[in-house]
Length: 396
Image (cartoon, rainbow, N blue to C red; front, side, top):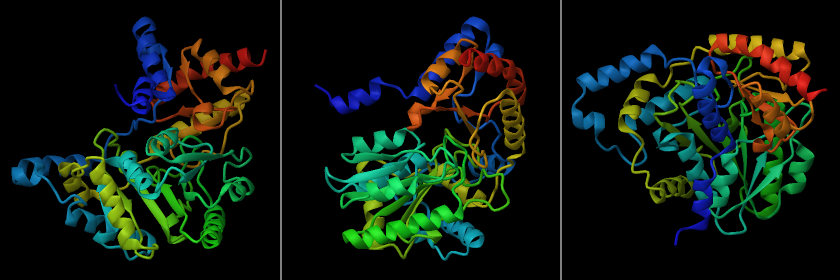
């Protein structure tokens, strides 16, 4: 006998992964150069040179036990100091090492957050469509109830009327992701302020904090001068979940953190619960080599020149064909309206032209598809005829 819940999760890969595996199978038949794979959000920009230089220096010159040995469960003190210093300089905050719990990437951070806020079988977590599909799996596998707010398909901000009417006494947290995967949209400051006002009001109404879990792996990938509003400055009961996977092009190395602001209600209990959740998941400590690298590279910013080039070309080409896209102001995704109004059907149409696009139904928005443009620029150029043929097939 095995857990039916875990068996279901293990037996059914995500839609994104299934599409990626299909692409590998087709590449063996028609050649990799003839597959236009926009499925995975796998950074195509190399890690910054500072990262590679730091890793080589640490491996060659630090004592072996210091390189590969255990760190404190909450993370290396110097690394947490470096992260705090960097955020304080950028956002005018006053964090210390004691606000951070280092993790094996954003997924681990989110699991710790969900395990902390889900207190019983009635606990609800609200996600804003379009949302990363694993949120639902994480919440439900930890005994909570996942509620979805329909997308604001005009601006891809937040449908506040639906949110206001969905929050209830069992609501423990709202999870947001900005810049957003899959839409590439950045929530405006007005959106974050309004969200904070509603959560403050509802927390007072129901007599317990409603946490804002802010999933921020794309925080540094933004193409506007204003950047991304730092959510924890607007709402005290924010749990920030961060990963260096996208900003430093390290998705396979699994390094990130949970940030708990000192002003959060019951800060000590909240922080200790995050640490306890990590312990319950078996996260002995975040990878020690990566922690030591982050100590040196906490302030390194990504070069997003190639992402911007890809975005600009693909957006211009698709809109010229007739596609409608959400405002792609961050991350490395285009969220595009299916020309036939059905993203599942359109994804299958595109596959006939070896064009791999993720249906928005996986993200709670079934009229749009996602194209991840962290790919080779030449592939984007070669793929445009396939986009045109797919559009024509869908609008016959």
